[in-house]
Amino acid sequence: MANKYTSLILSTVNDKRTLLIRLIVGFIFLSEGIQKFLFPELLGTGRFEKIGFEDPAFWACFTATFEILCSILILLGLLTRVAAIPLLIIMITAFITTKWPTLITKGFWVFAHEYRTDFAMTLLLIYLIIYNGGKLSLNQVLFKK
Image 1 (tube, rainbow, N blue to C red):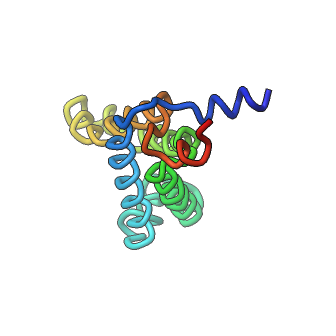
Image 2 (image 1 turned 90 degrees about the vertical axis):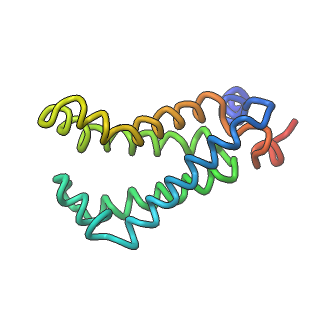
Image 3 (image 1 turned 30 degrees about the vertical axis):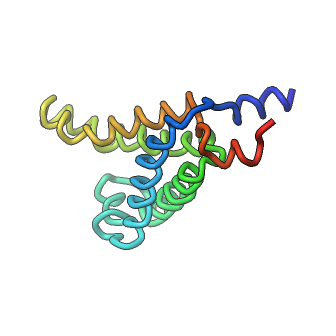
């Protein structure tokens, strides 16, 4: 049974096409996570407070830490599928807390403009969950059969 789950987590496409997706997702989330610490009033605690989170300092730090750690795993291609899941949860939370209210209060076109990057990142994360790290990944080096 463990081998079945290990295979599910580690199986990947046997080509290089995922590398570009990993670089895009990895560097964007790495940058966003770091910026939450560098600019807490704008992108970290202050942003989470503005959105209405209770204990915004905790949630900003929690989110930034996951963004940094998961983005590094994705850049390395190590447990890419597993690392993409928390980032997808962050994207869903961002949609619910920031983009849905925009759609309701400001209409579709403002929403579409503000959601374009989040939408692209969400689809790229789904891609990584489906296809994993690809041939140029640490998974391939460490766990190759």
